[in-house]
Image (cartoon, rainbow, N blue to C red; front, side, top):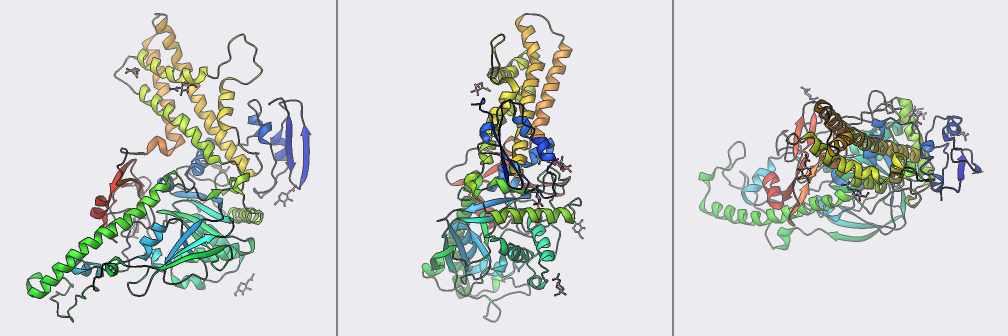
Length: 634
Ligand SMILES: *[C@@H]1O[C@H](CO)[C@@H](O)[C@H](O)[C@H]1NC(C)=O
Ligand SMILES: *[C@@H]1O[C@H](CO)[C@@H](O)[C@H](O)[C@H]1NC(C)=O
Ligand SMILES: *[C@@H]1O[C@H](CO)[C@@H](O)[C@H](O)[C@H]1NC(C)=O
Ligand SMILES: *[C@@H]1O[C@H](CO)[C@@H](O)[C@H](O)[C@H]1NC(C)=O
Ligand SMILES: *[C@@H]1O[C@H](CO)[C@@H](O)[C@H](O)[C@H]1NC(C)=O
Ligand SMILES: *[C@@H]1O[C@H](CO)[C@@H](O)[C@H](O)[C@H]1NC(C)=O
Ligand SMILES: CC(=O)N[C@H]1CO[C@H](CO)[C@@H](O)[C@@H]1O
């Protein structure tokens, strides 16, 4: 295969230059590219056919990218459309072009059929949980009244954010009251909706710590570009203002909307009147109390003759026998309804957790990804960075929006794009166990250095020998590190756009670093094994030092890679009636914080260095009982 040197280089401007090359080292992509200096990064691409990339030339096709920028990008791509990963790495800095294929069903609960932009859930459990609010009965109905508008079902204000303007939970913008009917609507995509922007990270977090920066940036640029007034601001819902402006900006480009993670994924559809979606079901929501034939809850008030103190607390000892009997009866109904409500919430959590492995109904066209990475200084720590940081100039923001406009004007087709997430998953599946096992062996202090070296090199030698060319045997094909890297990073589709080159370069850098480390550990420790076999004594001080170096290299690599698999795990295989629970930054039946406080809730802790809540590396199995105990119900 590799002998066929057919290179396709598309020089921007539309001229197709077909080069038939005979030398494998001919590609001078960097020079071609540097002659095409341009401000906009979404155009002026140079195409490289996947079939022309081989073990001995792939480096010529990569572009300069720092290792830290490479891991940041690698991890962003891996978290795309994954529930847990998006919450663990909440600070997204990229826009991923997304397609919702024809036939996909999406859900909305509300009192009316939307006419402008509105939210749609990919999981009906989300809409149902959202839309169905049963009234409380008995003594619980009193507690409910005291909740106040600031108390969302996901708990108090997130301590990670520090604004007061936005303290009303965002989703109350359409939260139903207990009066009036609620509809459960189901929509279907009539055609491929191929102009969505997926915003990575916990982009529906309703925080001020950067999770929503991709929306804010677009919204700010839209405001200036379109000379939009602030009239929408009166509503006080920052998120709605963002959505309104983004949809307004996207109109000329046919933007379908944006996609974000909640518990499960949600879509902001810009135009409900578009023929691209059709309503296929509209049901009035039936409350369980209604269905069970229960009368409406008794209104417990002073006016109705109930003994309440000045704080609206029930004075139990002043209750009449009749009142007490009534309350006890309602309390028993309430207990039944609470379990029902708990299951409803738990179903929503489970629907979200299912997408820890991905929301596979949505497709990504990586060719037109637009990211802040390698555009401006961005901390690679996905819990301590933001797109709108001090280095993000207005020019940079305009450029990002320009690139998005360019991408949208082309439209997306995921089938034309390498599915980089698959390539990267394979890389992680292969190397995460090797790195963890090596780290474990190298940190064994209870064993002799020889034993450590032997066990460690059993792993590294096993890896490197597979790529070794036998001494003295003629070999025209690739071998050793170069081939090892190539084997894991070869692109599945042609490299076409700047985004392709960026993602590809990131993967090459990441895999090279790992392969280098494996080979290096092998070189460091193999002499110890050799001398052990040959019964020669090896200076123990050198042995200890070699093992220390090897351990340090592997451990810092594990740290720098920042792969979720290397740092986060479910405590055990969860039972059927449990989910492996990752706390979520947006609305959720389980808050990030302890109900009614700003203390870290189940599965989270406060990180003083980053000054924010973080998710525990030990993920816990969660059952309905845990949910009821932690949250009560909603
Ligand atoms: C939040 O605001 C309060 C009051 O202005 C301030 O004391 C506190 O340090 C702020 N917290 C953070 C994390 O910024
Ligand atoms: C923007 O809007 C303001 C107020 O409506 C108007 O005075 C101004 O001319 C507009 N500018 C542009 C560039 O459209
Ligand atoms: C990533 O690239 C940008 C632009 O080239 C650079 O400014 C930034 O420092 C790099 N970030 C890291 C973490 O290396
Ligand atoms: C080396 O591997 C053997 C076989 O799995 C195991 O019994 C031993 O504990 C290991 N020693 C070290 C230091 O890893
Ligand atoms: C040893 O190499 C084989 C062949 O490449 C591979 O399948 C296996 O996973 C390797 N084992 C370890 C422990 O790395
Ligand atoms: C990263 O940014 C640098 C500096 O702007 C640029 O030269 C390089 O081509 C970029 N890398 C990729 C892979 O786009
Ligand atoms: C040579 C060439 O086609 N350059 C183009 C690169 O992209 C910029 C921005 O889109 C255009 O303005 C250039 O003409």
